[in-house]
Image: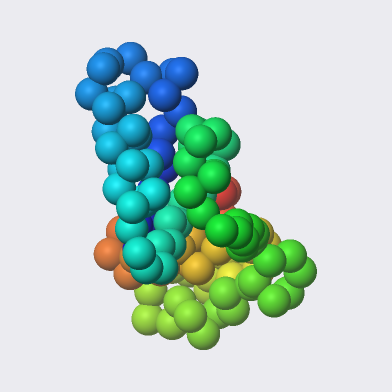
Length: 121
């Protein structure tokens, strides 16, 4: 499993240094000879080298959910340094991924007062 795979499968036509092209080439060669299951995770699929897609059997896209299913809810942020008004506002944000919710939680726990506007930026 390769997390943040975009760092290894970058588009070689946009490479500025020769080692960037070589790196992508080497990882593609290694995948071609690999006898096992390989999983690449990224949120920057558009930066992938086109040849890299041929190295994988299938692709799945996991987007942020819409509607109330992705709202973190006020309970996630209990114990945070946030006024009740801002807590309610932040807990109603939509379009957050689990990584976003984790980042917001850390900001609220260890940072200063946070508003929904600051979270969305």
